[in-house]
Image (cartoon, rainbow over all chains, first blue to last red; front, side, top):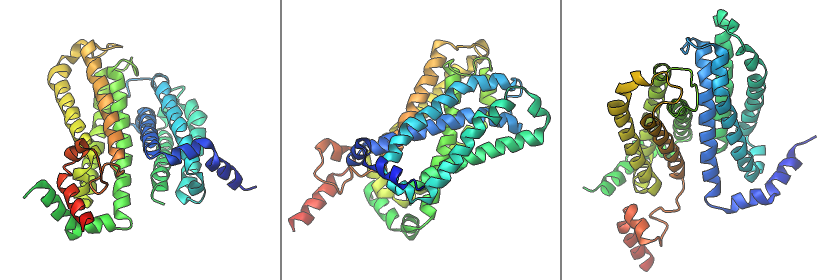
Length: 158
Length: 194
């Protein structure tokens, strides 16, 4: 089954049309999208830096995770709330964009990782006793987030 | 030689026009600018939210500074380098762009805020380092910083749009004044007149 009809439908919605017809809506929503990404990355980094062994070593992992969780969720919520209208307004371009599919694949993987495995390993400090594993986890997470950022920026160039 | 003359000359140099017309270099530099921006804004937001007492309340402020500041500074350095290159690729248009000018003014305000914070607020940190919610003026510094960087990012994004560019006339007088377009407007009029 092809996703093309769905992309086509998105493109034709009144919301998509309104954004396309406006000269300022797309860039303003996009700037908000970028801010949401920055916020997400900041919240993610609090844990990943710890897993990489770069600091915050006086706090238990679960406390650090609990502290940053609202901002992580907030950042992701802002990204979705702004990203979906952006996508709809240019869904046909996205469908044929290699960068878009890289971004979506990275996004799905990183969200699944964040809300399953990452949530589990931040419940206790036991992962920190295996520094190589904890570093690998952090590198994987940051690489996937970079995939999201790379794809996101590159959609605009294609 | 006026700024307009100078940036006009700069934009005609081989290096500038080569960068602007390059197939990949410009896009890669711009991407680097945006990625490091996310890193910069992310670390700044986490720090400002701590100052506001909205995040990591049980982590001392000094520890957040120690751990995050190197990343913030590294990201900022890359942003300044890539941002300068982006300006260098399209100097005149950037110089006359209303959002670019607005962004530069906001950057100066952000620098002032950082200076005030380090000169007046941070030396007293011993009193509120471990406070869940720091005192009012600390929160004020954090809130101002967050607001300024948000506006800087939004105005930076808008530089890409040519709504108020000099070659799009007529514009309101105030716009032409703010973008130093007066000369360009009369040039255009003379071209149209012919």
